[in-house]
Length: 238
Image (cartoon, rainbow, N blue to C red; front, top):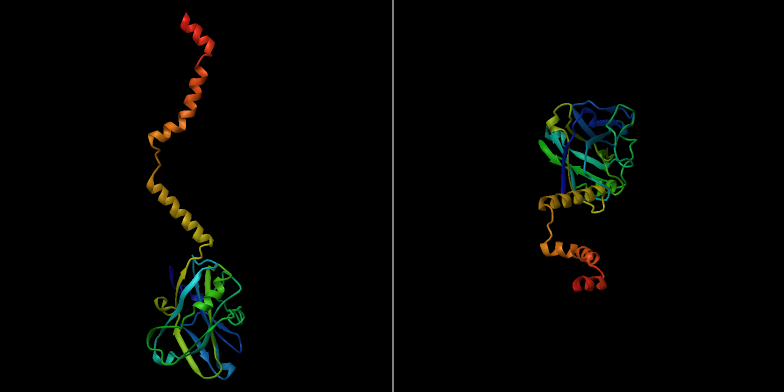
């Protein structure tokens, strides 16, 4: 089983967006996901991580997000979590209007509805089924999560952004099993076999085996050097 423990590593890899205007903020000190009855109060969140070694067809065993909350009032989750779909290498966020809302999303999603998330790191619900939808189609080099606010209640989720504290930026933890048919797995198996063969050194054949290999050639050479029977008898009589 393989594991990847990732963390947002750049200013443009976390952002939030006002739902009614589509205005995206990429350099705020917090990522906000605000659910509200009024569309003018709702905000979407976006998080991005670069990833390597995850191949199409791999089996996702677990996937969760960790967010850091500076205070209890900022930790009230009321949103649905999607992964960006339709592309193997989703881009970082930009100030382009509707950059988060307009991104293609997975069909699958997971609801995160939880009040009173404490100060410090908090973990999302399990997201493996959502990420599996992406990996069934692509070998991703980056992953983007989209947090879509709900419209049934007024709640604020506000976590630390990279711009305020890189060490407290959002984390993504993934464990997965290799697809034995994937290119990465085939290469890994071939490299393991080659290393094993090198460690054993060259294979030496037993002496008897070497002699048996060359015996037909030696026998043929002796037959070619033997004179015909008549010549041999005259040589003996002389």
